Image 1 (cartoon, rainbow, N blue to C red):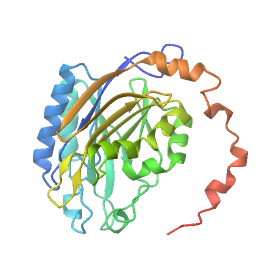
Image 2 (image 1 turned 60 degrees about the vertical axis):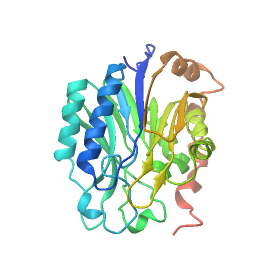
Image 3 (image 1 turned 180 degrees about the horizontal axis):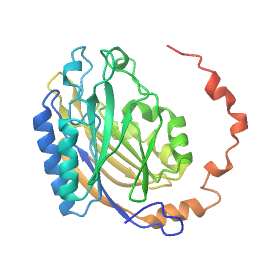
Image 4 (image 1 turned 90 degrees about the horizontal axis):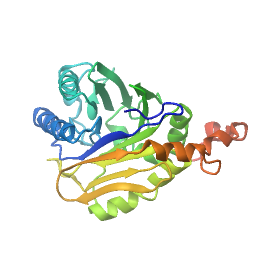
Length: 286
């Protein structure tokens, strides 16, 4: 089942997980990831997305570097193993070692054949900048005919990222979050101020999921999962105080319909010659 085949857009079954990840509890978090992959496979899921830093846990303290791992490494080897056993693409968040003291916040994409790619968070929140290193590449990934992009939490506030990924041909945008505070309903409403535009303006499916519960370091995350169609309409969602895996089918006909509608296929009518100021102006640069 593939999305993105010209003239033959098929359905795709996707899973998204809202889970609790204790910071530094890598072995425990990996076991939980493996369990959710197994559960999703039983429901026929072909891709599964876990929250930002789901493997390592999230923290903004200055002692995170010892928990960073290399890619490839033991954790990614384990993810590749279970991806092969369950015949599934897995997106999971981890701290990645980098040159120097600060690690990357990364989202690894693996499949049955190995590592598909790595997204390193390009836009860090003000608190994260003290602790982490920024990535410098906007990359999309292709696996078995599916083209997808990943944006991590704070990156959702920069629409240029979604536009660039759309121009590179993505069919699905994944937004893994580690967004603390608020209750689940208020967090969902916060997401609904930005995410529908990312889907609608670019004519793509969108899947977002947050960490859930305490991280063991004083932060609490509300459970939220949202899946949207290419018109920005919410197709499936979860809000609550328990861990959750949500499995749903994204209908290829919805993507075809949007991309063939002249009033909804916006990116093809862009005028990039007018947009130069975007790349040379930053009034509030830190």
